[in-house]
Length: 93
Image (cartoon, rainbow, N blue to C red; front, side, top):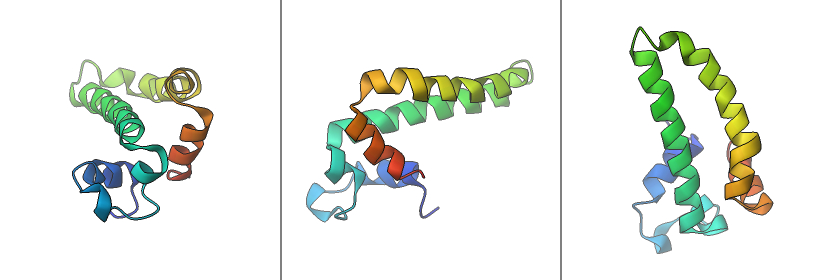
């Protein structure tokens, strides 16, 4: 899956910093910030995957999609600077 910013960041966490592309999110915002953002994404993906995997909780799947919007608009601005978010969001859109 080339072009998927989440998967690219997951891979880049394990690459020597000297070998990273110049446009790498890790080089733009720093390792800690990129790792924290990726961890939040991984947690949300895990929540979505877990909910959809069980018949009893699959009904809540659409609600969690709405929760992603709340997390992005409310929680992430408290965890990251506006500059960091604009850099990390640029990779998505």
